[in-house]
Amino acid sequence: MKSITELTQKRPALAWLLFFATIAVVFLLGLLASSIIERRAEALFVNTPKTVLRDGEVRNEKWGENYPREFQSYYGTADTSFRSKHGGNAMVDMLEEVPEMVVLWAGYLFSRDYNQGRGHYYAIEDIYNSLRTGAPMSGDAGPQPTTCWACKSPDVPRMMKEEGITQYHSGMWARLGSEIVNPIGCADCHNASTANLQISRPALIEAFQRQGKDVTSASYQEMRSLVCAQCHVEYYFNKKVAEGANYLTFPWDKGMTVEEMEKYYDEIEFSDWTHALSRAPMLKAQHPDYEVAQFGIHAQRGVACADCHMPYQSEGGVKYTNHKMQSPLNNVAASCQVCHREETATLVQNVYDRQDKILEARGELEKALVRTHVEAKKAWELGATEEQMKDILKGIRRAQWRWDYVAASHGGSFHAPVECGRIVTAGLNIAQETRLKLARLLSSLGFNGEIPYPDISTKAKAQEFIGLDMKKFREEKALFLKEVIPVWKAAAAERESSWN
Image (tube, rainbow, N blue to C red; front, top):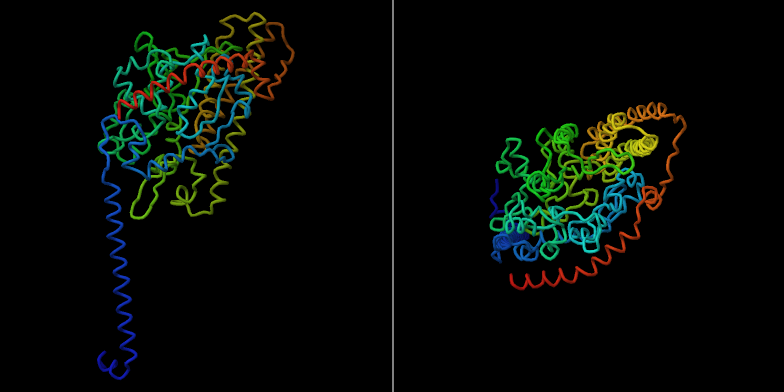
């Protein structure tokens, strides 16, 4: 066999070809080495803190100096342009979309105002503007307690530390208007010194402790859901902890199913309000997103909330978590298609198919519940006694709790469609059984006619039907905000100056 030297001597062109090929290989290897070194340097630079964050730092902008990519992506929650078929991040008037809700919540603040939530960026602004928070300075009878701030801001743990947890839960929400000014952000989920995920709200820790569990032993992957579970859960205001307090409590002592939480509430004889039409002692589900998701296939396979709603993203040599916190349907490639290989249109349609089926059944339950409340009102008008109405009111409470549990769960019809379908079906069965009892009672009271379904085709008509003077509420809230917002902003600016 001829050597390379002999070949190149006889063919000089081959020598030049090998020479240039060697130079090209060396050049490409140099580029690769340079890229690796550059990306490692970039990652090292990014991961090296530039600002020492003080313990309890609540200002997202300060965190952004150390974590610019996460900070910039977080402010993507200000985007309200995306709407899916049944969700998204745009503000949607849900009472206009489903006027039956007004009647189902008659006598409760949700009958005034219930909007689909926007991004976390608007957490403070939206609680100001909500008609549910009331206008205490103008004499509104419905202002909410300080506890309503609990999930809206990293300033909440700061105030709990300054005032004490129980004291924080006392008084009306307006008393902390100048203190709670930073929207949901970094310090809600991360430790300022290490940036590690941490639980900042005592309610979650206490709920696990009462179950004999230690949340601090959770794995990193579990924490990627538990930091969300600080707020995206069912809860109630426990008034028995201390005089004047509305202590935030999760009803998980008996378990996380809808029936186990109902049993918990029944045993402590708790109700959120008494329905204005039927007089039933009602339960208002909040947003049991974490609990419902546990019964879905994704959670059972170890998928965390952040995997889909805050997927990883790479930029240069840096891999980071996208903090836009949005519907996965607005980012299918990074969320769904990391695991699923189907086309985007197929995956989106899969979601809609599940949501459509649950919403169809839920709509039937809503109409049945409206009829039940109206028929119960008629029974009272005809002279029904407390004893005669006892089982009927219990049925109304149980049926609506199941409806509300599914309706209030963000994404529940996708997270756990089988469980949501089971709950809605159970609610519909209870509602129909209750209506049969009402029919027998009305007959015994001498009424055998049909009670017409009310004209609640719009939010305004539904609110008029239950006797709400919405003009008064809006005027009082506008006056309240005009008076206090400048005062709150001035106080917050003064505190900000002292921190700097």
